[in-house]
Amino acid sequence: MEIAYTHTSPAVERSVLLRMGFSSIEAKAIVEGVQNLGLLGKGAGNVVYRLAKKKNIPIREAGLLLVEGKAWDEVPALF
Image (cartoon, rainbow, N blue to C red; front, side):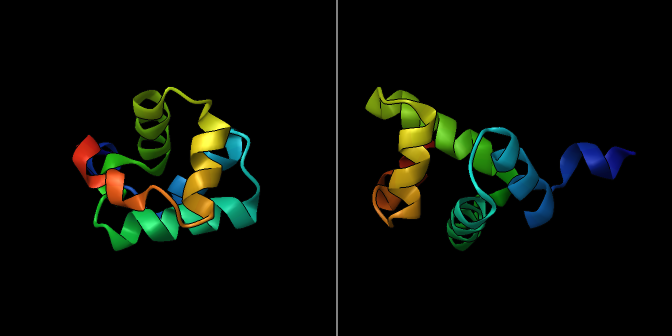
């Protein structure tokens, strides 16, 4: 039970993004990017949320920026 509170997986993070309204293909791209930055433990949904807040744009728009390969350079500074 303790591990579930402190660990996540790509599958769990994709599931979160699906519930946020992203398609499975979009979710996969976002999770891969988050993994590449070593931020999976912060949560892929949290990455998208923080980017949206920083840029003052809707969550969906922030996620789509990441899917398009944009704004990844801004993500590490969010944490």
